[in-house]
Length: 200
Image (cartoon, rainbow, N blue to C red; front, top):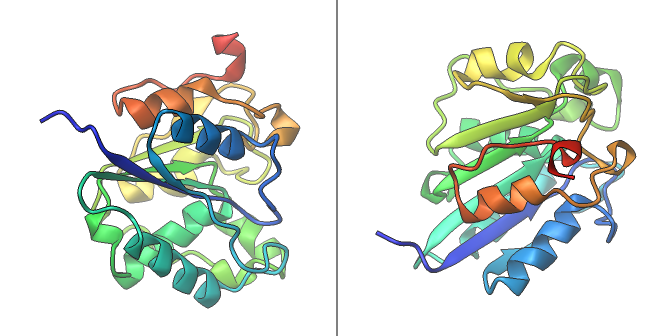
């Protein structure tokens, strides 16, 4: 079946106030131009987030996704961790999403090292069955995941991390003001992720 209608939920990370130059803002704009429904919310208190508050916000936004077509979640950094908490708790709507992209989740040691996000300490991952096809993408040199995404997440979640050389945290500091490969994945789930350098 060819999917003609899609709705996207784009979720930002810690201290992210949705700057227009960030690839997530760029992605939301491009998807909107393609005629898709896009929700790119400002999550509450991005500098001092509270897990329960973010979960409540996530539940509302999941409920707002159009059930008539494909529903896609793109979560960067702390929101990737948020998504795993939502799945662990069986948050309504998580099982109804058609596919998920987790980008550059910070490791447990990093979360523990910052009081502002220590409350997002990871749920047990080795017993966490992901209800939805999920891809995990990270830089091979992410300073917020020094253990490496495969060790910190992939092995426990039975996912193969797609590691991008030199992409760091896949944020503005790493040069990710646009990222054509993520747009391609949104439109075609079989897309192989590439760095911006490889796309240039």
